[in-house]
Length: 542
Image (cartoon, rainbow, N blue to C red; front, side, top):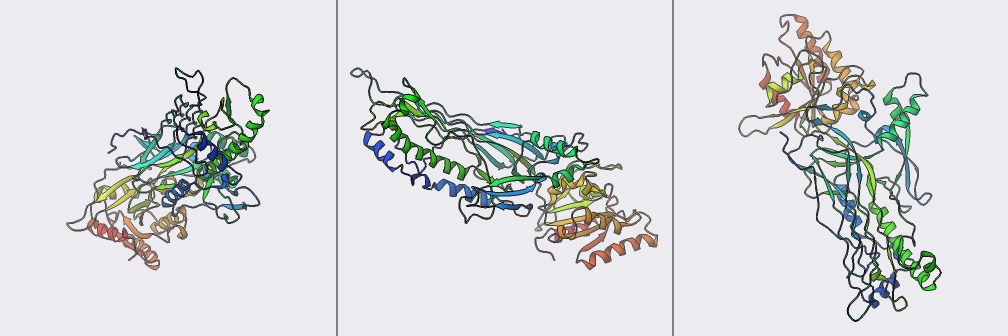
C-alpha cells in the first residue's frame, strides 16, 4: 500500500566554504581582505575542496553493480580536457518516451516505473554594494554582504513508496537572495528533495525532445526502421570527468553550467565597467579575483558530475544524495576594502545554476522472479503461494505490471519474495509483447523461476525460447534457476504428458537446474514447490 508522502520538501541551509578561496567571513577587516587577496596567486585555483571527496564516496557507495553498458573511449587527458567516450543512444534514454503509440505504457492504476525528469538547481544571489551610514558619517566603509547560495536538488530512497507516479516532470530549486547591507548574507535558495521508492536507479539522460529529433532523422534513412535498432546503432558522444593523464577510466559524466569567464561577473554602482577597467588598482585586484573565479570553476567541475552508470538506490538512504548543486552566492563589496581601494563600488554576481535531465527507473527488489509466456499460470502460482492478489484471466497479458508477493513459511523459517512480470512472447527481443521491458524488476533477484505450461505442444521449446528472449545462457549464468511445469492436471493419464515433463527435466538436469510438475489451479505439489523456491531464493546455488 502506498503511504502518503510529500514528494518534495526543503532542506536546511548549509554554507560551504571552499579551501581554495578561504574568503574572510562576515565583517572582514582591511587586513583580512588584503591577506585573502594576497593568497589568490596563480596556484590558488589548484587548491582542493574536501567536499569533492565526500561526494565521490557517496556516489561510489551507490554505484550500479551489474548494469553497465559498453562504452568506447575516444580520448583521455591530457590529449583532451575530459575523457571522451561514445556509446549507444539507447543507453541514455527510455524507449517508452519514444513510442508514438505505446500500447503497453508502464502504468496500471498508480504504478509508474520509468520517469524522465528535468532538474534545475538555483542561481547564487548577487553580492551587495553598500556602505555603512551613521550619524557621524554619510558614507562609511563597505558593508555589502554576500549573496545566498542557490538551492540544490537532492534524491532519497524512502520507505512506503512503490511507484514513481507521484514524481513531477520538472523540479526547480530556489535562487539565492541578494546580499544585504550591514554585512548580511542573502538567504539560501530552497533545496528540493525528490523522494523515490527503494530500488530506484537514477541516471543522466538526454532531453527526450532531442532524442526524438535524432530518431526521426534516422527513421527517414531506412525503409523499415526498428526503434531498438536505431537506438542501438546511433552513437552519442559524452564527456566524462577527468583532470589528469592518470584519469583513463570513465566513472562520472561531466555536467556543465553556463558561467561567466574568470575576471568577469562584476556589478558596478555609480561608475561604469569601462571606468573601472581603466584603473590600475582595479586591474590588479581583478587579476587576483580572476584566480578566485578559476578556483570556483575547478571546484564546480569536480562536483558537477553524476555516475556514468547511474545511482543505485537499492537500499533506504539515510541522508539525501545531491544530484545538482546550486550556484554559489556572489561576494559583497565588504571583501574588496583595501589600503588602496577605500570605496569599492562593485560586487560579484552569483554563480549560475546547473540543469539536466535524469531518468528515474524503478527496479523492484524480490528474491525470485517468475518468467514465462502469457497464460502459463504465473499469476495463479503467485496467488496460491503468497499473499499477493494478481489479476488472473484466460486472456494474454493479464499481468500488466509487476506484482510482488511474500511467501510466509512455517515457524522459524525465513520468508522470501517473488515477483510476477508480464508474460514474454517469442520475438520479444525484437520489441514484441511486454515482458522484456519488465525484466528490470527481476534483474536483482537471486533466482529465476521459469514457468512452462504442460498443455503446450512442446514445453521444452517454450523453455528454450524463454532463455533466448531473456538474453541467453550468458544472462542467466549467475542466477539460481528452477523450472516449473504447470497444468500437470490436464490429460494426466496420457503418457505424452509425462514425456513432456521428462524432456524438460532432462534438459534442466544437464544444466544443474531443479524442476517440478505442479497444478496451480488445483493446488497440487504447491508445498513442494514452495520448498524448492525457498532453496532457489538462497544466495548460493545448491
